[in-house]
Image (cartoon, rainbow, N blue to C red):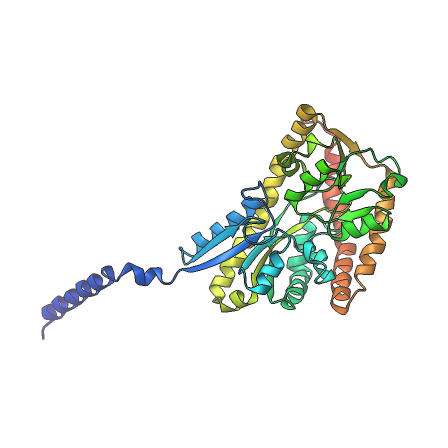
Amino acid sequence: MNRRDLLKGGAAAAVATATTASSFPAPAIAQGVRTLKMVTSWPKGYPGLGTAAERFARRIEEGSGGRFKIQVYAGGELVHPLKCHDALQEGTAELYHSADYYYKGKAEAYAFFTTVPFGFTAAEMNAWLHHGGGQALWDEVGAQFGIKHLPCGNTGVQMGGWFKQEIKSLEDIKGLKMRIPGFGGDLWTAMGGTAVTLAGAEIMPALQAGTIDAADWVGPWNDLAFGFYKVVKNYYWPTFHEPGPALSAGISRKLWDSLSSSDQALFTAAALAENDYGLAEFNAHNQAALEALVNEHGVQLRQFSDEIYRGFGEAARDVVAKAGQSDELSKRVYESYSSFRRTIIRWSQIADQGFMNQRALVDFG
């Protein structure tokens, strides 16, 4: 066979191969699509929280070229908003988007991976998770329940909460029923108040019914959307309990372990992208929402006194230390968190706080 015959044969083979590939049945490709269920703690389409879950799911779908299809369920559609953790354990869903301090009843250490009163800002939380050993400890906590956790959003610094009456002294806290979860709820109880854990959509009805006297939620953008101003007018700052709460993407270990290393990298990248994007979104919208609450809806913006804030701090120190002694794993998480806090707080004071204090000296208009 001469060279011309070889070329003709090669061309024919190439055409045959192309024809075979183009006629490959589409259903066979579609059979590779993996459909997953993700439950959330948020109302459907709720700004900053519900939309974060939807974006996370969409990033995975698009990043995988459609190999993964994730059906997102709002809180209450498939399971109760605060039962997402149970849904993964029971196999009702493969993923969730929630705040892990809702599940501190399962493991006290969970609350450290959402937020700690007088603890990390969003930037400091990310530093601990990625470079201070936090993620490895979070993995260890989740492994007890067959769940892999990834940071998947952060609200940034929150507000101090909504109160039907003014809080003028520490005495005003005693007996006050407040919706406040996690270590913040433990702090509130330690100060003589009554802490109540409710899902976000349950807060407004409880305020209207008078079953709670106060409520923490997120910040101006989210709080405006829920319309708390229609019932409560006293809006306090600064936060004492949620300085930078991380949202969690929970992934069943059964699913996680079945993924290839490249798909695990995809899920991780999608979560980290939302962790960054979500924080930026809250920061972009909060001030305009706060101005609307004050100027359009008659909300009274009030600041906690130094006396009250010192009371919060003293209670927080004791509550968090006690939680850190509840079991061996919680102790290791607490020690890691506290050690990293002591170090990074010094840098934050010099860098972030130092710059902001000096920036205020000059008015740019």
